Image (cartoon, rainbow, N blue to C red):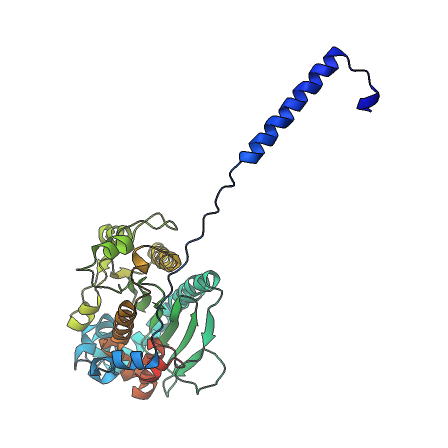
Amino acid sequence: ICCTMPCTPHRLSFTRRAAHLYIMFAVVETYRVTPLTRARASAPRMVALADDDIARALADEKYAMDISSITEGSEKETYIGQGSGVNAGTGIGALAGWVKGLVGRYLCWKNRPVYESLWQIIEDDLLAMVKEHEPALKQCRTWFSEPGANPAAHTFATADGKCEGTVAGYKGAKIDWITTCKFFSSELGFGNLRIDGWASRETRAPHVAVHLCIVFNVLFIYIGMPPRTNLILDDAYNDHVYGSPRACTGKSLNDYHVECVEDKAFKQYTSKSHVVNAFMVAPTTLLYTIRFSKKNFARVRQLSIDYVRSWLELLDETDGVLLEGIETREVQTELLQLDVRTRQFCGRDPDTKNVANIFGLETTDKLVRTLWGNPDDTIWQSR
């Protein structure tokens, strides 16, 4: 069409301008620099410890702990041991038989709904959050089942059926092992519930624990993130894990610690046991008793959710403090040894003896081993 149209001066001027623009764009395209795509940070390549390395690292007797090492008499020094009536002469255990039975029935009626609501926090809030965050998480068998058995939770009970509980274990991604556990005494009217998450050696992120109990009309809580380093020697770890705000909550773990210290409804609990106190090495550990009310229950629920949410964010980190040296044999060995000792704390926990007084040694041993680790993991098979 252009060839057949007469070229007037106006039309010629337009054609020249179009040609100039075309040439200019061609030059720009010729010298355009394609921006470099920023590579996503990847986790460092770790040294895998061979079976012989693991055996040597855990050869010392201190890594072969069992529940027989619990200090005699210490079971009466815990909050549950003092108040629940598990031990004769303490709490409602000091009451006469018929009075004890009457009080126990009343507490069962009053506390069972609270117990069920606490379980919703553990199962429907916390574990559900972890499952959504880590799709690779899969349920595993417990130490109560035989090798090759289908993965499933296990229910345990006393011979008279007056106290019943459930325990389950899961594994996947950067979560080496995570368990949920609960039990309730219909005779004494108290309940104990917990979720314990153990990070894998792909990261130096801390572990996490949320333990919730109802005794009388009081909530007893232990919420913490045990460190995987010596905080006296590792300021960077302390500042990053416990003092830095998390993106998911806008708060640091120390912020939650301060809030609880300043909240008059929260009564800080100090154990009489040197064993328990030695385990409370995280500077922001929340160990409190709180009188039950809807308001206080909601506060405990939110603390639990925020703590696990913060833990999952720490697990996601792919560089920085939590990945320092992770690829070396030295750090892998240190993490292995520290993790085994940390996870075996319940072997010395005085409350484990209270559980043994309720369910017997055989059930308690399998329960503790399930809390320790995966029964199909060679590390825990050898403990």
